[in-house]
Image (cartoon, rainbow, N blue to C red; front, top):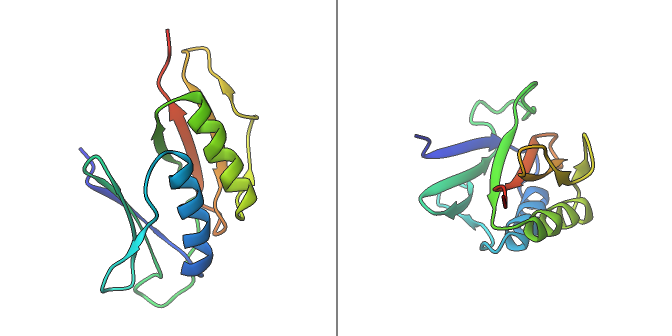
Length: 124
């Protein structure tokens, strides 16, 4: 259903450091900057794009919003969480753990305050 998610950042180089580390931890590739100055991460037809707001105002995080990122395994979720906290993210909510439905999840806020989760599918 979704083609992409676009989020704002006030510091694209800081965002690149954080997102490159977290996407590589999931087995992905570092982002690429397009001609319009947007940082783009692509995988399996989906894209996460980070940009400075086009209205020139400061970027703010969504209140109540969460961006979910699929991970191949619980080990990848843990690597994502570690990379994120190492490169400017903040651990939030509960520690990385298996949920009652068998999914393994972790939560972070990126350096701009956006709420992210990495989730591996249930192993049951």
